[in-house]
Image (cartoon, rainbow, N blue to C red; front, side):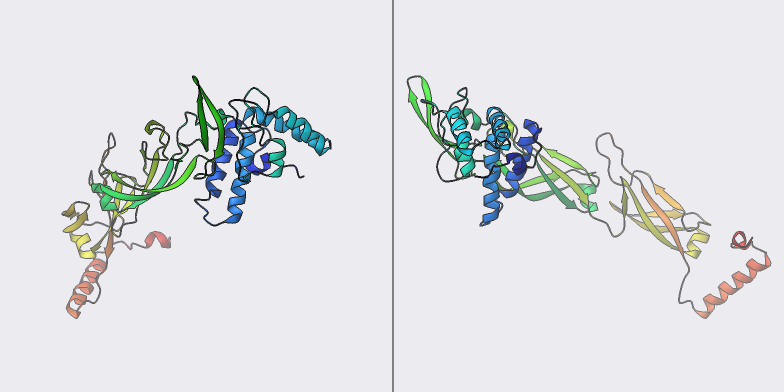
Length: 362
């Protein structure tokens, strides 16, 4: 019989803490869960191996004895002697104990040394105890999701309907991973047997899909992370539900370039508008308005409209709307228009207007 390295199965070091073991188990269980991998025999086998490893490493007493078994195994002691010794430590207990159940979900190694012992806590065995599977007071897993919105929706607020793939507590076993058969003996509750839950395969969690409508407030910036309390994985009680963390992404806009809460627009103007000054119509998030271009404006000049960017939220003030001028030379001129430009050029030379390229030629 081959020794089963449960630490390797969960991908953790032998010095791993209980928290690290639990975290590794939950991550792998979700990845290989039958609900996520329907009709995948390899995933089903891997899932059973992960579940078996956690049954031992997830319990302090079982882990301690497993570590000792591993040391004895490495010393090359006879397998039959090890089986006799560790089975004897388990000792079948009467009363409140229960067995690991039937169905062949565990390896021969597990069955030989840890399974079918029916022991109770305090007896030193490896059998499952009712407390091993009782759901601890812990929060269900959080969920993460991304949502894409337009710049206009970011400015004015919007709603989105999300389809969530959740990991919820199993409704059959209430997240314990086990279905138990109990009896009353006087005032005592006696657990006669327990089977790994067929619905969740002993993990206590099931895959689920649900629809959620969320409101995205006006003034939401790109990359904003929203926390929706209680909208994550479902726990045994509402107060133990996980949270949903929603990351908002603003799609690129054809006109406006977003930088924080500021908006930038490249504004084309004719050369004569830049030279003489002009009133031009420009876009904003709330409509159109007139913008005055000062005479003598050059390409690259930035005109700022304060508070016309993305709306503010809370203590954050609204951004600004910035127009960067791009001066254009007219095309397809008539002979008369070309004549006017030639006349202008002659007058410029007569006035000895400085060469704009003089600095490059020094």
